[in-house]
Length: 254
Picture 1 (spheres, one colour):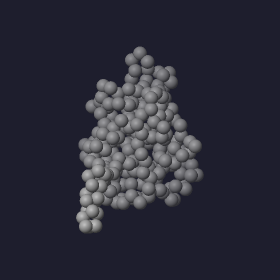
Picture 2: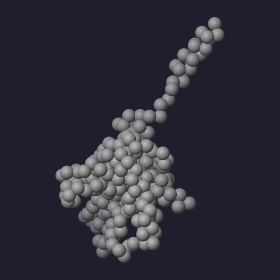
Picture 3: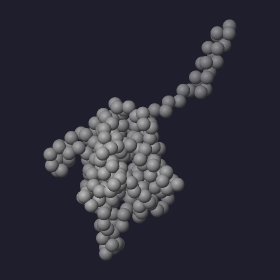
Picture 4: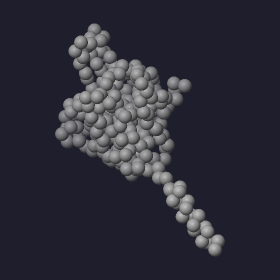
């Protein structure tokens, strides 16, 4: 009799309180993150504004903060033509530009934290655990060829194939700092991805396909041959900066 009661109670619990799964399909994950993906670029001029695209970013923190690669930010702006750093939200014809300013940068890990004006946007969740295993399925969403086909976010899927040391190179010897020289001797680890990416993907969030947790920031593509071959004959090897360094940038504001 007692066994029957326990069985009935278990059956009722399953019907009333079904088991909740934290995982989801990739299409659902993309829908969850799409509004947090932004394009990075500049607007030049006022009457007939000229738009330029430099990379991808994603919204974090309070909804008015954006993480991207430092190398996608122009080194100089044409102030005579009122050129401004801009973050583009939305997609297609509904895309809108928002003025952005740099809050903090991390040259060692090629990251920058921006602030945008206007209403707050949905944010991503960062997963900066160090126990991410090789073979983990990931995806990244961004703008691989910029404004050629309009600002429509594109998703690529792959796996984390390795954790490997890397050094973010300086553009010239003059930019080498004592910290960067030290980093060359002891390079930090990045995620090597078995996934096709393109230059416009720089700054894209790399996330787990089943949860949407962002584990890294797409940083570079392995180029075989000339730079033009990145588009015509991609290597399928990409690198991502671990999300821990993005979290460190956010924490540094406090």
